[in-house]
Image (tube, rainbow, N blue to C red; front, side, top):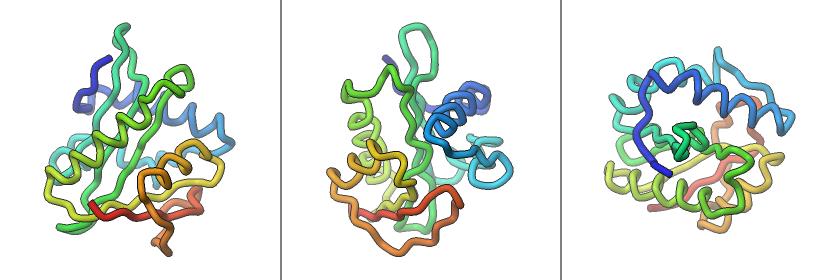
Length: 152
């Protein structure tokens, strides 16, 4: 397994992974709104004081994603943390989250927030285990019903 920065050339594989996972939970992808950031990964993340990384299998398949997106100089949003079903239950979710939190600190952020859907139970439980707490967030995505925040 390799965790590496994503590029715009990865876009189709990233969308395939994320959109299939969303649909498996009964959630609809929103390529014109919530998921529009995927149209220019480099511009929306790498060139905007953030990160977007992919977990790549030994067979060179993208099997996971995680991103840190700048909100303010001190606050970032954890976005697009997804893991293909065969990779779950092996500690990769924790590794992706650890990586994102370390990256956020290294980028100078002091707080991270995220939005999630109740139906993504595994992810929601992981975030709570990592010290994220509920707050009344902006709920930028119609498919999300929880906002969580954590100091770094």
